[in-house]
Length: 293
Image (cartoon, rainbow, N blue to C red; front, side):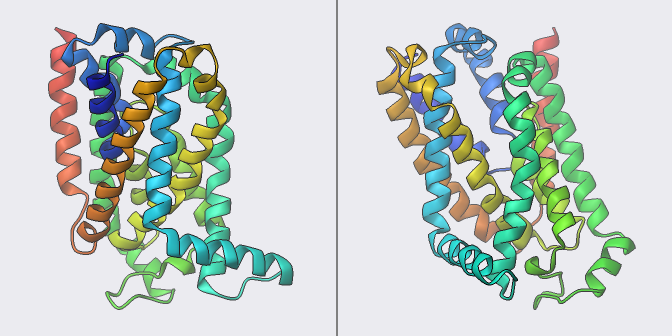
């Protein structure tokens, strides 16, 4: 892997990890389009330098999210500590902290077992393109379900925000578990982690802003844990000869992730998932045609 490849892949990771269009799907499709045969071969190998490269990108993305939400994370961690000591939850920050803990468990457990084999199995452009199309339909379905009367009834039975949507801290713990379980779909190249968790939040009556915020907060420990868990790949033989590229790519990913979360946190105050659904359907279809010929 050369340094330009590292920078480009880092930028792709930093943007598409948070935009609901699948970072893994783009990291599979774009190298094939660019003709980067070395990267394509490494993605589907059981052991390769690409594993070491992913470690840096994941850690950098998680650090960018931690920096952006640093004040909220400080309140959440303090709330978890205080509520653990008194053995009851009293404040919104305490409740949000435990919602995140519960939502992290399903994807954490499944990802620990299946992330590597699924990545190797579906790290093909055709599979990624097909799942990107599925991702587009998931986003469309989320917007459609959100307008259904069943969701409006859920909102009506809980405390609401000024915009009339359900408050984030009114989620029940089992609902947080369902939202967390939705992340499991993102183990498939082409399905967006942020997209499926946002859709799960929207179907429980959250507005786009809170659904996105919960998705980004939820992604932070998962992405960071994935990077730390794979740290031996970076420090071991897989990292030999590419640690400089990992550093450069990680810086690019971190900067791109910070800019992306800053943009999206404002974007979702007044806009929807529709543009990303259309993008996923269009790019997935074009890529499927391209790689099927």
